[in-house]
Image: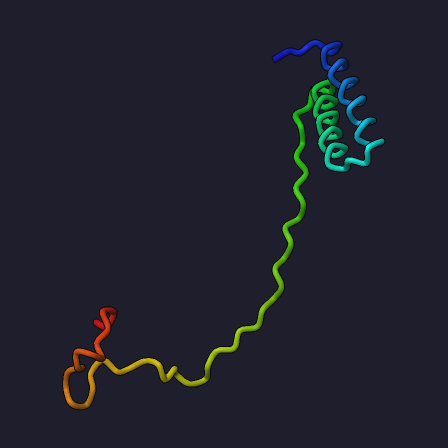
Length: 95
């Protein structure tokens, strides 16, 4: 897509006007947004693809996990000494 440089410059000038108004009003969000648009137009003039800046991924804090030294007392044996497990003690996940 070939866009005439004069047309791009016209768009940049309108964005600069918008940027000046945002600066005078103290609107930081519009300042960032308008600056990004101007940067994109400049990249079009330079003929390069717009670059995206990627912030480095923050490393999550290291967590220490403590494993129990003995098996949990929550687990019930599948077969009790008396034979089969009573109906009330059964679990659908017991095989």
